[in-house]
Image (tube, rainbow, N blue to C red; front, side, top):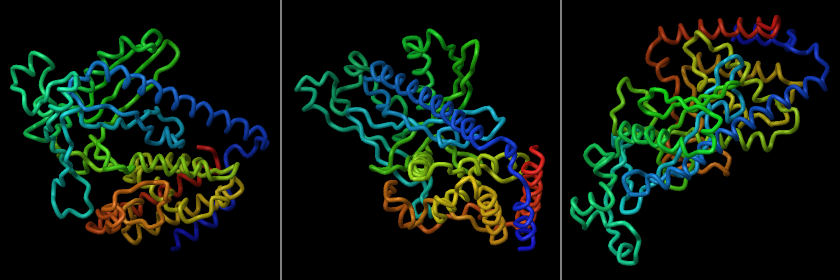
Length: 394
């Protein structure tokens, strides 16, 4: 508590960098920066959705999942990319089963709490009726492999699965090949140069002109019912993630939460600026940007949005640091979506996630006293860094 009190007194006496500018100039600069950021996110989203339309024609034989329109996720699309860092534009592309297939999610560890790791069993379904009506594809279940090979190639079960489970590595590699194959027919290819980047559980690439370069990372995911939660290709927290493991992702729900907040917040809201500034002080510490984002989401959900106006910028920074300090002291930071009864109703969660017990992101601190002591030391260093930044601008 002493640390909190000292920081609370100090932060109220420092100036915000840029206060020497008049308010109109500051507003124009902020508005222009936000506009440029939105325009770039829209460009990246349109690019990936255009690719999806082309890919539908290339991979319509049942050997690859159906691609749905993408979702912008991560700090760039949420509006708080840290200053001075190379921005990676992250997107999630939903996968749906092609005709003649069904996706049946299964828990990797039945009884696991919370449910975070899944396998996706692929099951063939009869499409003979559709075939007889001139559907254009043979039934994978009732035609022999030779007939299928001659007419349309193997089923998804035989092309991208290990056993009967959809394989992340095989799916990502095939998607990687699709991006390269489709790029040459995209209108963007006349101006932008494509460079594929190595990545085992996502598809990462750069598009560049002589003037600018954009890095894009696409995660693949299978939607849980009609919710905003996905089983994604991203790696789990385990040291080794099996190739048939798909990890629970709340990234789309998080992006939707920030979109709803932006829509409801009054003019002059600085909640994203607070998050953006705090993200700068994480460098060199064991705290992740996800930890900080979770803290801010909890505060946005409990503090009236009118309280995030620029005039209360320092108060909200103080709130963020106090909240994080308390979490370190108590060795507990609850995940924002697990068992949270205050989630906005516009965000659709699976029933299992709504009923789940709160999941502690700081469980490692509870299990290791040395880790907690180190986290508190790092927190104090972060306080010093934030104070210097606010006072001197660096």
